[in-house]
Image 1 (spheres, rainbow, N blue to C red):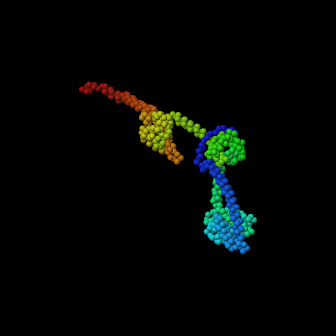
Image 2: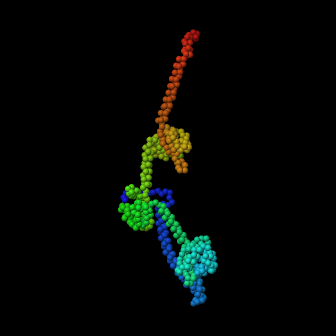
Image 3: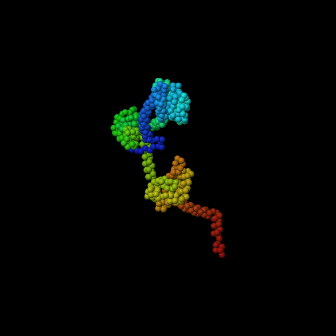
Length: 491
């Protein structure tokens, strides 16, 4: 595989849902959010430990309450212990409940009772499923009683007043497994955040899968960390797997150094880096574009795209534009584009010369109203526009024009109306030819025809007279007139 050169070019994004850069930035943000969630989960484990400690404390206090008759404490000490316990339970910012092995409430704290607009006493003796919205909690408690474990935790969904909430429930058995105490920690915001992250991750994964490019995650030192697009990887590098390898082991040295340069630039500046290079694939030179985006302190996302077809199209367009420009500049006919309001947008040198201007720029700046400044007969401009409005194209339209020096010439125009996709008129464009000499020749020919007609008429009359004198009638009259003595006739 050989590599040849590199160039810089900004690529215009089509009108798309997400640019690749924004998608990569979102992926990087997602990774940071996931790292934060892991830290929060670690903190949550600490909360669970504290919850279990609280459960153990409750486990110690409740048997003392049930064995009041055997207790060594005085009634006053017991009352103080109950008040302290109640204060602790009411201070817990989540539901606390006691349930016996038959599935009935032994008691709840004020927080749980308030969620249902009930008093704690209303729960005592009720089945744990007597209220709607707590089916997951009921199933969790039943399974926990059936297991030998002394403690368990689970996130359950509960509904309070039509609103869903998520609680991390920590349970602890006491009274030899015949009762449990449970403490709930509100996980709603965290749960919704996790769901949003999962949706975002799924969405971003779908976006990435929809991108046909080779996407690489590379460390600052040039180690491949992840790859998306195994087919493109093999096509561009000849490798089936490169994770854990160095770019210096996969790519030619010059290209590897180029990669490292832009990787470091992206990390240092935080800006997207772009470069192009050529590779030889199946005996053909193909042009690839690489975009490098920083996704952390020590790594980047690098996107490789085959832009060979785009480059060939750009070259073809450039050649076509050069050919058009050459035709436009060197055409023997005048070529123009003009606005519906009557100003020239573009004219070629030949058209400027036809009207006596030194350059196209001079003509464009000098003529601000084509109908008034150019047309000798302004009504012809109106006729021209009306024809284009009806048939969108005009052929061999002739009119008289003023030149820069005031002289009048005849021109012939072939033009069309250019409209957008909605049918809105954008401009007129066409070809203009100076037909002044042709008009003069036509006038001269017309004059000659008139003269010829007169001459023909004269000869025709002469012939008719000759024919008349040769008739018998004319001869008889002539003989009679010859026989008359004019002197005697007049005397």
